[in-house]
Length: 113
Image (cartoon, rainbow, N blue to C red; front, top):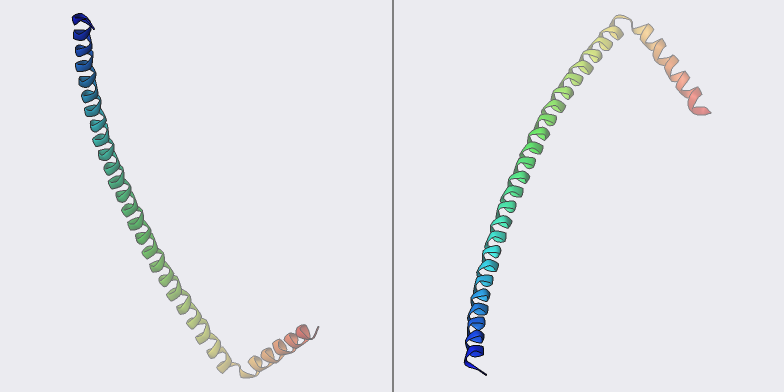
C-alpha cells in the first residue's frame, strides 16, 4: 500500500466513524422525539378519557334526576286518580258495583275464547 492510499484510507476511516457517530446521535434524537410524542399522545388520550367519563357521569346524573322527577309526577297523578276513584265509589256505590260486574263479565267472555 502506498502512502497516499494509506492516507485516503485513514481519512475514509475517520469520516466513516464520524458518520457513524453522527448517525448514532440522530437515531438517539429520533428515539427521544418518539418517546416525547408517545408521552404527549398518552396524556392527551388520558385527558380525553377523563373528559368523556365526566361527560357521561354528568349526563347519567341528569337522566337520573329527570327519571326521579317523572316518577314523582306520575306517582302524584296516580294518587290523584286513586283519590278521585275512591270518592266516586263512595258517592255512587251501586253504579261502581254495576261497572265492576260488567267489566268482570267482559273479561270472563274474552278469556274463555
